[in-house]
Amino acid sequence: MLLDKLSEAVGVSGAEYEIRDLIKEEVKDYVNEIKTDSLGNLIVYKDGDSSLPTLLLSAHMDEIGLMITKIEKNGLLSFKPVGAVDKRVLISKKVVVGKDKVPGIIGAKAIHLQKSSERKRPLKIKQLYIDIGANDQKTAKKLVNLGDTATFATKFSELGEKTVKGKAFDDRVGCSILVELLKKDYDFPFYGVFAVQEEVGLRGAGVAAYDIEPDLAIILEGTTASDVPESKEHAYSTTVGKGPALTMMDMTIIPNKELLQGIIKTADENQIDYQFRRSTSAGTDAGKVHLLKEGIPTVVISLPVRYIHSPISLLNLDDYQAAKGLVDKFCEKIAQGGFSIERDY
Image (cartoon, one colour):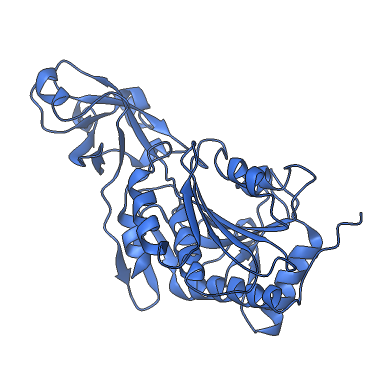
């Protein structure tokens, strides 16, 4: 399964080399052009009828993680978070560090040595460290360098018939769907962007889209699903198993209404389940893309993910297939001349 390889690949923001190389190998035989820009975005292109709209599909490659900021005298590694890492879940997690994937464990002062006040609140990042088994600084420096990134050593696996677990589903699910769609043929100009550094400020996709200047853009994402017992239903952002989530508004974008209605109509016509993302917090690369030049009509299609931004997340495979099917059917509609946006406003 493609998603398992993408999930287990390493690609913390700013160090997306492994996941980029994996995707490049997957798509190279299906596209007309492929390049990596100076920021690190992987951009691919498939030829099509220039009288039809040019579509940009984008998903970000990067994942949250850690960056090594100091190698202590005793060989332990101090670090800073890269992206929105929940420090409460870090202790005792397995990680891999750097290109050589040096194994390590995130440690902290033992609980029986902590003061009662320390036990009542999450430990601060500065109180944690990565232990790679080095006895001193000299030994540790042979294995890792300052600036190396670390990510969780999580294996992808199935839970039951329709659920999978893994790391970095935000946004390896989007990358996986985009790869699969690039292997199909649609008769319109088609750009795929596998973007960098979304988790640290939506930095990659906008750079790529500025150069491409597409007629339409769809951002494929993983989004939070808070459908757990302690949450009230009205507070759920999305619900796992109810289909892909469409964004009506978030902190960075109000999607193009005509394009959004086109997606909704496509889902209804093909009896594809979907839901609306009920939270208006956070944002995606759409926030950068839709503001470029004269403005680019943009929508966001997301996969509900439980325990997002943690060492292990859960995803429903029916949601995955529904999202892929929805984008596929919409691409077919564009190719048949069944959708366009008149820029006369």
